[in-house]
Length: 297
Image (cartoon, rainbow, N blue to C red; front, side, top):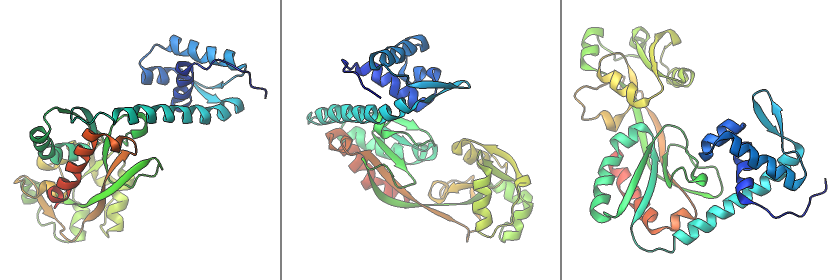
């Protein structure tokens, strides 16, 4: 393949990169906040500039050609370099003001973050915080968040991570459910219980089975994609479900059962290496690192 010498247009390159990552023009247009025809024209213009075909149609989506696959890695590196320049420049401002986006699971956003945000408002009132409450893993490299609270170690080399605590989940019911059902002290007792599951019940039931509990999929009469909804359904007496032990410790509507059954998992703080040099992001990071262990304890 012979590459032409062209004047490179970053907007067109970005359109190509996001289309490659999203797999279709419609999804890429939504991600970039533009119309699909405008995005399509930018990708077509880049193909004409380079003299190559970048995509082939596959059903309703798009797949990279060989030329597109070779080019996409170079464009991705350009994008990350552009972000690094922006972050380094932002880090030169030493004042503790401006926005910081923190992503956490729904339960952590409800349970752990209020105390941190209250203290942050006292020590740095000019910092504004956007809380991205989601169980999905947000892409820190694409600025979907500045800091993430995760339960897994970051794998990407340009992210930094620090394990700050260990959390534990247990099985809970409401007092009303326990009174109607009877004792839930032995593993065999759970075989008759109604379970409140998640959208991935195979993983949920697999963990219970590995813990020696005789459960079946038929017991998951209710499932929810939202962990916060699962916890509320437990409180409302709809069945047995998983909840962080610390979150339910002082809740009169939650009773822990099968006390010997628990699931431990790490709590990590994650940020982009360059973002970590920003004074306001560093302050929020330090507060989280200081307060989360005590809040989880």
